[in-house]
Image 1: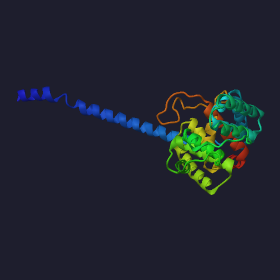
Image 2: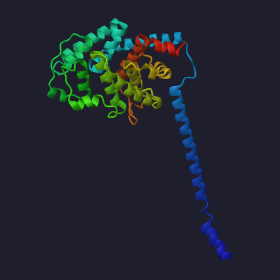
Image 3: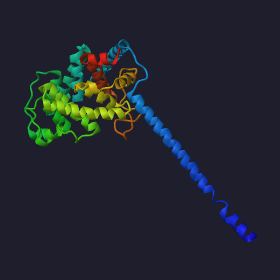
Image 4: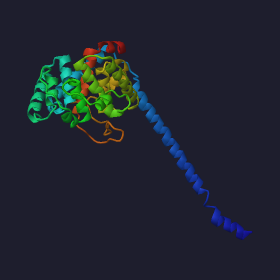
Length: 310
């Protein structure tokens, strides 16, 4: 009897420690999951709803100040748009809306950059159209066009479809509602915005833009990081004529995240546009888009401001 008992003590007594440790581990895991869910819920609510309601006068004053500050930054960094045709297009549109002479100087510097540094590039004459709507365009052969990136082909086609005709596949991709997710869709939306700007409205373009922008708004509801993509979605929805999809909270977060020098950061505490993209990238891309979004609100969508602020 005593031998059996001593055997139980030697072999059996340490065993209950494992269930206790497992119970503690599961409890801490459960607490961690609850905290994570709470943080995500807070981030979602903070991204979509504001607890404060600023006046229309206060909102307009901040838009004016932030837009002026952003234009000052763009004017001090003309190479940002001079080496990036889509940004040059945005700067040209801001200049058209504001009439700001600082941006006319930027566009002239952009044109000089294209004429010298990129004079041999096949699509350079198309990009000069952003600064000079009367600039002559060459005909680009299908072979030359096929050597460009898919979005560059779209942009050239948008400027003049007769001078840069797309293949059937490229045209189908441009109007696809399902082919491009996330960042690639942004290029598609911008190409359609450009096309409508240079060639006028059409039912097909308008309908495609509306559906794509609804997907942009869906992504914006859940992607709470104020990154380059965050600013971009709002600018593109406004430029596409879909201001009704833009929430006031999204615009407020853009305003509140402008940096002291007038720019916007590309990433959100090092967390970039993509889900697994980390690092620091130059802020010029985000800043031009931020200025474009604010200019669109101020000059083309005053009714949006009147509908959201009193």
